[in-house]
Amino acid sequence: MKTVRDIAFARSGDKGNRATLSVIARNPADYPVLARALSAERVRAWYRDSVRGAVDRYPLPHLGAVHFVLHEALAGGVTRSLALDAHGKSLSSAILDLPLEEH
Amino acid sequence: MKAFRIGAGAGYSGDRIDPAEDLAERGALDVLVFECLAERTIALAQLRRSQNPRLGYDPLLEERMRTVLPACVRQGTRVVTNMGAAHPLAAGQAVLQVARELGLPRLRVAVVLGDDVLPWIQAHDVPLLDTQETVRSLDGRLISANAYLGADALLPALQSGADVVITGRVADPALFLAPLMQHFGWAADDWPRLGQGIVIGHLLECAAQVSGGYIADPGRMDIPNLAEVGFPLAEVRADGSAVITKLPGTGGCVNRLTCTAQLLYELEDPQRYLQPDVVANFSQVQLQEVGPDRVQVQGASGTARPDQLKVTLGYRDGFIGEGQISYAGSGARARGELALHILRHRLRRLGLGELEQRAELIGVNALHGPSLGADREPYEVRVRLAVRCPTRAQAERVGQEVEALYLNGPAGGGGVTQSVREVIAAASALIPRSAVTPACQVLEL
Image (cartoon, rainbow over all chains, first blue to last red; front, side, top):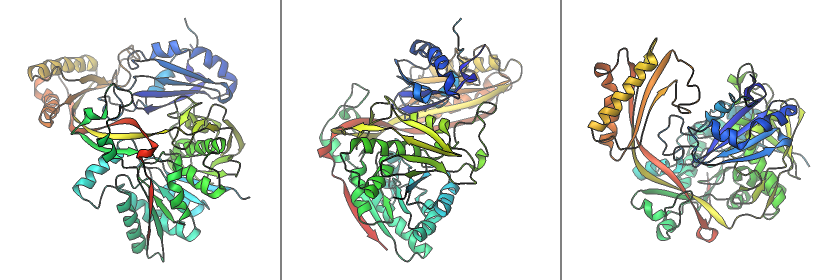
């Protein structure tokens, strides 16, 4: 089963209580497959344990990237969170296991 | 016209120092920028200043300056940094002291003031962003309030001919935008060009994150000689286009992928990146590889700057008590889960059961919760209990209960650590520009 990691890499960052997530195709030719796999609904469902709010999706075909803002994702925000990874830096690794095709 | 060369000497307050020294020595730079202020850094610095009125600036300021100033002064490279933190004036004096110790013949330091808006905030109750509260809810707990100044606040400092410009809170990309505006004479309302200056600053402000840091994944994304990763620089043209690159012989790499990852890092709506100087639009940015470790960036634009400035407020927010203990081998996960069950029970007996807490297993569910990776069995797990407590004494009990698992918990627990930390949290608000009056003070050797 092919996953996002087979064609892309990811980086996340923090803004208040929101996490940003960029998923970037290593080869721009794979962008359509990546964009199809990464609907806002699938991303929201994948992060159901950590993301409490909405998911904004920004497709950027000329960069081969799909960018997301995950609302209420950081347990109150970096500066007061009880989480081990208060920045949500490791959230980027989770999306790489998402299967490219839905069952 | 020759390209303007601007480099990144630090991407956060604790960043590595050697790559900045290399840039200062070999980079033939016009400007070397050190971005060292995270969200709550100023609040922590303010606490140090309240203990000692000569402190309150970045603790690594002197070491960084000792390392780069000789080469910078010799070659005419100007230094721009927000290491002033909660006390830019004391930081300026500290830089002069370093220059004296180095025996430098002369040095001019310009200090940018005016970001501290604590008195204004205390006199005007304003709403806090992302909450239903106002500043009044932080009464008695507020430590600091600093507005994000823009490049306009740095221009007088640069125009003074300073060798070193020291600021407190400034929007990170503005540290890069200001020298570009000053050098090329870009107008303060040339929104598309300022947008392009912001994208250059944004690509450089996290230093190695654009030149091969934080991207390696062996087998999928291999980065050459990451241990010796070099810090980036931009060669900027008057039209605002730039090439992002790094010094020959350094580790890491600069390519389309490293630049894309950094372009989008911590960005929200790519069409509206709010900055004090401009609302930048990154949605049409083009990144093109034009040589080994050379990526051309163009296509950013911008619209008129916002009417309000963002302020970061630092405040005391109780204590976090934490304890950890490890279990290994067959049944490790079950013993870890038993330990968590016991800890929850004992917290309730202590009357701490209702406090906000995390009770989790590192190696199983601590980072992303219970559903991802639930089917994978770890060889070892680490129990982690963290509780938000109103008092330090309560927070100390949390770690003590974890330690007590040695004699009073499941078999084979080891490696206990415990900690208590006071939480200095950050909140944000918007204030009118009229509440902020930037100023510049020049100090000379």
